[in-house]
Each structure stands twice: as C-alpha cells, then as structure tokens.
Amino acid sequence: MDWKRTAARSLGWLTTLPYRASPRVRIGPGVLGNGRLRITGPGRVELDAEVNAWSHAEVNRLITTRPQALIRIGRNARLNGCTIVAADRVEVRSDCVLGSCEVRDHLPYSEPPGDRRRPGTPQPVVIEANVWIGGQVSILPGVRIGRDSVVGIHAVVFDNVPPGVIVGGNPARVLRPLDSAVSGDNRASEGQPAADHL
Image (cartoon, rainbow, N blue to C red; front, side):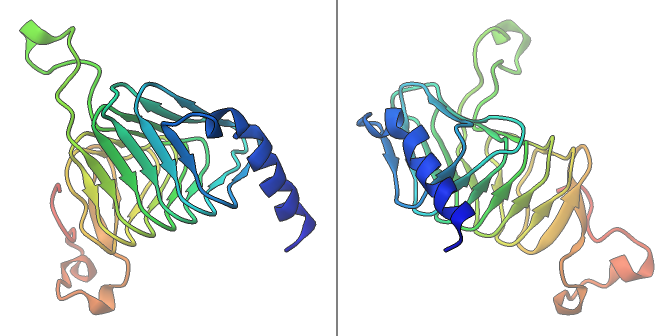
C-alpha cells in the first residue's frame, strides 16, 4: 500500500470519529477520507469497507430526514461531492462512482398544488453495482439504476435505467448500450436512438 493511501485511510478514520460514536452510523474498515464527509439526520447510515469518500471540491452529504430512513453505501464505492437524501431508503451498491450528483428518495415538495408545502412521498432509490454517475446529475425518487450503467453529466433521471447502458439528458434517456455487440437492438447503429425516454 503506498503512502498516499495509508495517509488517506488514517485521515478517513480520524475525520469520521465523531460519526463512529453514533449508534445510528456504521462505518466499515478502510474508509478513505479528507474531512469532506457530513452525516446528518435522525436515520441510519451504513458505509461498507473500503468506501472512498475523499472529495476534491464539494462535500459529500449523507442526510436522513426520518428515524426509519437508511442510507447504505456498498463496499469500494467512490463518493466525490455527492448529496444523498433519504426519508426511507437509498442504497448505493459496491464499486459505484458518484460525482457531484444529488440522489433523493423524496422531493421537498408534493406535486398536488394544494399540498405543495409538504414533502413528497418517499420511494426507495437503488443504484446497483458498478454504476458511474456524473456531476450535476439528479436521481429522483423511486429510480433503480441497473448494474454497470453510466449516467452522463447534467442528466435528470425520472425512471428506471436498465443495466449496461449510457443515459443522458433531461429527462434522461438511453443513448446507447455500453457494448452494442451484445445488444440485440441495432437501431443505434442505423442512426436511430437506442430507446425512447426511459
């Protein structure tokens, strides 16, 4: 292990000490950090082993808004300036990379105009293993992002994302499979979009 990783691991342990004392926070071994991780709220937060929370610019914010809420970050996930807000559950599985995105299982407002000042109904969000999410991305309530997929910068994801694709835009849509050779749908190679809105 090189000296930089050793230093990041030591700093990660030191800067997460205040959270380790809390019964609602579980932090696995080997977490890397530089003091840019903030955990707030009454719910539970779980970071598996080897999570890398070293952020180069923005702070990583893990926010629960209810006692029953859970944010779970899988093994070897990389957090680089993301904000995750949960009233119910947000799960980021192993080997994911999250840029300066926002992931939330509920909106701060309700859609019906008469209820606008009340928070929306929570719907769990699941980001499956080995997903990459770019900067300034919004992942909205109830979304499941399939394994190995990539969400491009500035995307707004309203609906589920299948595994093994690249999505982008607002609203996000499938741009192409990661490996078109394994896809039975060759429309993208014919100049047509691989899929309509998700």
